[in-house]
Image (cartoon, rainbow, N blue to C red):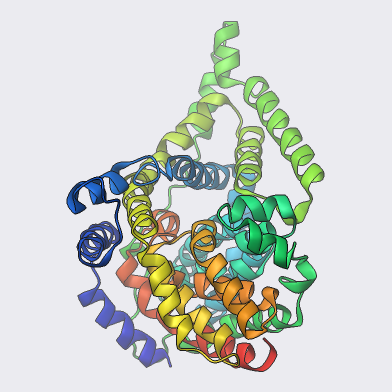
Length: 467
C-alpha cells in the first residue's frame, strides 16, 4: 500500500497542475459546455447570455462573503497558532508520536474526529497539527513523509457532511430552513416536511458510514506510510525552519519603554484582551442560542479571533501575526470568484441539473441512493459547495426518492456523501490547508485519492444494504 501510494503521488505530481490553473481550465471547459449544451435566455445571444450569467452577482461575485469567511478562518487559525499557549500545546501533541506511521495516524484521527464536529475547525486544526507533527518528527530526526501528514490533516473534509456542520442535513431540520435551502421547491417541501436529524445524521446509515470512516481512515494512513528504502519528503523541503523567536524580546523592550498611554494601549494586553473577551462572549451566546449542532463559520471565526486576541499579549503582537497569516489567503481570494462563476454558469444553464438527472435516470430503486452519490460526486467537482450543491441537486434527488419509495433522509445523505467524497480530488477546499502546510495540491492528491476510493467502496456497500 505504501508503494502504491508513493506511485500514485508521483504520477499526480507529474500530471496535476496548480489549483489556480485547475480553476482556469474548469472555467474555460464550463463555458464551452454552456455554449454547446446549456439552456440560456433567448433575449440575448448565447455568448452574451453566458457572460451575463458568469459575471453577475449570482456568478463570479456570489461567494464574496464566503471567501471572506474562509480567509478569516485561515487567518484566525494562523493567529491562534502563533500564541505561546497554543504553540506549546501543539508541540506537545505533535511530540507524542515516536514513528512516522504514528504521526500520520494521529493527524488523521484528530482531523476526522473534528470533521464530524465542524468542518471549518477540522480544516484549520488538521492543517496546523500536520505542520507541527512534521516539524516535531524532523526535529527528533525521525524520517517522515510530510505530504502524507498534510493529506491526513485534510481527512475532516471526507466526513464533514455526515457530521454536525453538514449543510444539507442541518438546513432540512425545519420548514423555514428547507424553504431557504430549496427556494424553488415549495410543493416538494410541503410533501416531505422537515427532516429531523434522527433521519439523517443520527440515522443507522450515517452512524455506520461516518463512524466506520472514523476508524478506517487512520488505519489507511498507517499502511500508507512509506517504509524501508522508500524515499521520504521531509518537512524542511516545504517549510522554512521554525523560528524560536515569538516576538518576546521585541515586545518586552516595547513594554519597558512604555511612557505614554498610547504606547501602553499599543503594546499592552488591555485593548486586545477586552475585544477578545467580547468576541468570545458573543460566540458563546450565539452557540447557546442556536445549539452546538448549528455551529457555523461565523461562530468558529469569532472563537478563533477571540482566543487569538486574548492569548496574544498586545494588539501589536496580534496584528504582526495577522499580517504574516494574510499572505496565505491569496489563493482563496483569487480562486473563489472563479468557482463562483462556474457555479453560476452551471445553475443558470441547467447543466448541473441535467448531469444529476442523467445519472439518476439509469438507476433502479435499489441502486438509486448509490447513483445519487455518484452524481453528487460528479457535480461537486464543478460546484464545490455543500449548500450550493444541495440547492441544485436536492429537489431532483428528493423527487426521485419519492418516485422510487426511497426515504428522503437516505436520499439527502446520498447527496451529502457524494459531496464530501470528491473533496479529495477538488482542490477548492484544500486551499487553506495548502497555505498552512506549504505543500502543493499535486503533493497530496495521490494519497487523498486512495482515501476517496476506500471511502467510496465503504459508502457504496452500506448505501446498497441500509438505504
